[in-house]
Amino acid sequence: MQLKSLLKYAIRFVFLQSLIFFTTVWYFDNFIFLSADHKFSIYLNLVEDRERFYSFVPIGWITIDALIFVLIFIFLIILYSTKFYTYVNELDFSYENRYLDDFFMLYLLWNSFIFTSLYVFRMTDLSRANLVIFSFLVPALLIFFRNSEIISILLGKSVSSENYISFNLDEASNYRNLRILAFRNDKLSLQITEKDLTNEVIRKVDKLNKSTDVNLVVIRLIKLKKLEPELEEYLVNLNKKVLIISDKELNFNTNFIFRLLEVSSQKIYYFNNDIQYGAKYILKRIFDIIISMLLIILFFPLFIASASIIFGRDSSPVVIKQSRIGLHGKMFGMYKFRTMYNNAHEQRDQLKSSSQEDSPLFKLDVDPRIIKGLGFLRKYSIDELPQLLNVIKGEMSLVGPRPLFAEDTEYFDKNYMRRLNVLPGMTGLLQINDRNTDDFRIWYKYDLEYIENWNLRLDVEILFKTLRAVFNRRNSGK
Image 1 (cartoon, rainbow, N blue to C red):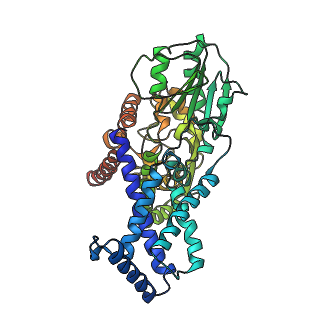
Image 2 (image 1 turned 180 degrees about the vertical axis):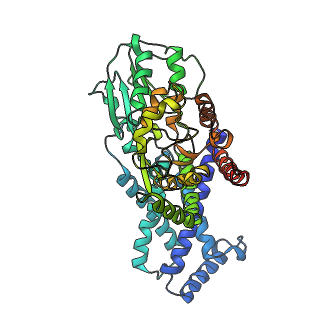
Image 3 (image 1 turned 135 degrees about the vertical axis):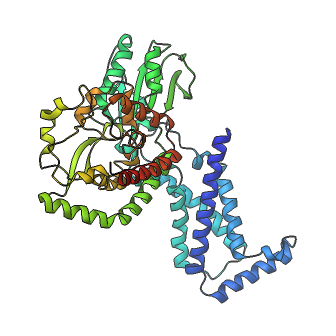
């Protein structure tokens, strides 16, 4: 097993050990032991057993909490030695969701182990009603933290809400029962010749991604033994999940990481280059939610003051919602403090000639649609603060490429479409380097740089530099 995988398993093991241990100690102290005297009598049983059976253990180590720690450690070692708990294979054939079955399996394993241990170590006269509740508590924690799938659902990214597009995969194909397909939605299924595969895959995926969210691309091959270099490069750089089912063994033009599964003499190739997926997505979402909630509390007086000023200048609405393109092409409503007159967006086409030509960037040196006296809200990005609600909802991130209007995607080529495969952000590399540029090539440069180098540390650096940039604008008066 690779060092990276071992480290991931070790971190998860330590997390589960700590979580279950502290939960168990807290629950026993508050609900299982009937009194302090009751707990002390059980401690005396442990001391007596130590003298009879394991006197080599130092007396200072004999505590109820230490016993609970060791028991949980042993149980997790046993559990982690099985693939049942530690490994969920997306390429397995699945016909139904098995969360309930898995929960009861964990329930039986945990309770057979823990209640046997309680009997062996003479933990008697415990609160029976609360023990029944406890018997469900730990299996629930284990199933919840089993992998990133359930946590992702709670954070707004459900597998069942994801979509896929398939090429040459029959409607009745048994491969549609693969777990990776069974729990996702078939958004579009196309039949094309393998001769036209490269052009059609690129064209259809890009087109569909501009109108709806696509998370997975599935390709069925019959005769081909090798993808064209252009198609292979496109799929590898797509930042999505890709599944290729082939009758032949494929020879790839470049080296990249993929999984290979053989089913009935057919080859299944799977690779996932989604940079915000699984544990990475969870860490980013938790970071976004915590920081956003803190910022809302911190800037709440500014929210109230801004809303009052806007209402005083031009009545309601104070906050507007604009349709923007989000993760994987999904449309969402982006919140902003209204700094323009009502229906200002309808004048966009009329004023387009004054902006940068052939570019999605729409910037005017003097915009007649801005309400008099509210330019400072845009200057210091105060009008963007309501987007913290979009971040909490999971539609945006604190850091990422800025979300654009749906009509702007007509300018996206197959490379720039990659910007749709990460959460759009309130700020990004562009905003801290060249915020007021109207050169689309600079947007392109910074967006792809962020996508190719994304990590949580980079997000933190960008946030601090954003705060510094806003502070510098205030002091410079620009």
